View 1 (cartoon, one colour):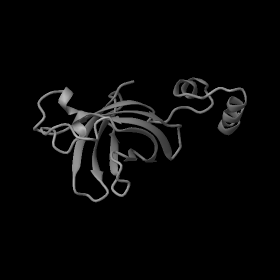
View 2 (view 1 turned 135 degrees about the horizontal axis):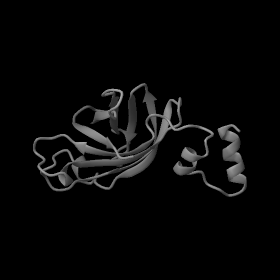
View 3 (view 1 turned 90 degrees about the vertical axis):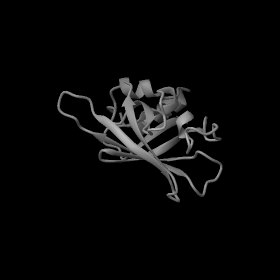
View 4 (view 1 turned 180 degrees about the vertical axis):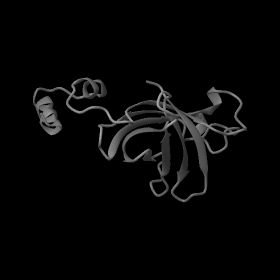
Length: 157
């Protein structure tokens, strides 16, 4: 049964599809990006693991699809100066569509109410060998390109 038909049937009987259902129903296998990620800021000024906690995100990705659904939340290390007082971006969150381009995931983050200058997250998957898990790295910048943050990501599942 095609995915649209499955979703229509679920809507009729009042069921809401979730990530677990998409993984286990066998209709559409999960894509390479599916999973939960912990993004950690790479900044020599940060000295603790908690201080480097940048973003948590869940990615729902169907194999072969050029987009993914990403639920994310911004944490302490999102502020431009991690040594300054906490900024208004901490706690920002959303669920948005991301573009999957080969081994790259691109996502616009609405960190602030200023829609004219969104943050753009670029995360790359790097293969490390046949028996080792992939490595994830990337950066976040804004549309005006006047700040950026580098990060490493750990796939948690």
